[in-house]
Length: 357
Image (cartoon, rainbow, N blue to C red; front, side):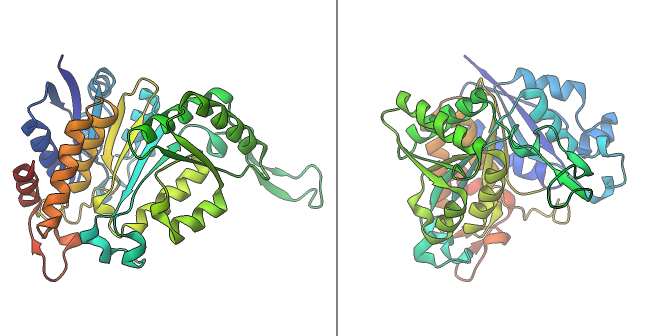
């Protein structure tokens, strides 16, 4: 059975890095059908919209989407609904992508890139699973009003609502346990159950779901402690599952442990396992076309695509092992280059990964 993969290169360095990831996927000789379509600014230039109907239809009918990057300063004056960044928001909404997977991996060869001591972060490999569609970011009611009561009655106040339904928590918890099963078998659920009712429900539901996964060790941690432990002892974590607000903060904190965002893949999945896979970095239009962009985050995103949407762990591991090999061989793109290593181009890094497969 062939799996259709929607390939959406986008803007800036997007086409360059996507090209290398496509080369790697093709070299694996898997039953994949890769179909490209414009998205972001490139789509606006062609069709007057950053997410044309044909691109959206391709994404929705595919097993997974491999996404490059969108955005360019030249589109900043467009109406907001026509700006390139709206394309990814549109895809998330239309595809029902509620779970964001953000790995934080620091290969020993790149330990000097982190601001933390090498012995603390060298060999770091953790995964943060963030719920994307609920929590205080989307809860109603919300707004700005005159305070109706309390010590500041009559003053202007802002208010938001943190809320999660049990089914929302269950579906993200299941993905967390399943991700841990594919890794080291440890899941840490992060909340603030000592002060938040929403978090108490979160903790209760995650604990209940744990009964279905006896092979996974579940722990709970308050978010303030988790933020400290990520800096103090990040290698103690395997998989972290948390809500939208806490996940937003912790995933950015974890990404900076690695020292280079050019190495970080990400994935957003829906209930059926269909996902959108993209590098964590942006479109970097200032270096587009110069052949210096780092394609490794996109190549690693392709590995995540194989693991989470196609359930092909063997091929995902092949790609990740090839990336480790080229780094061990001392090859670096400009963003991770240091004395004593060999600087290569975008295509040169792609060549090296292919040779290491």
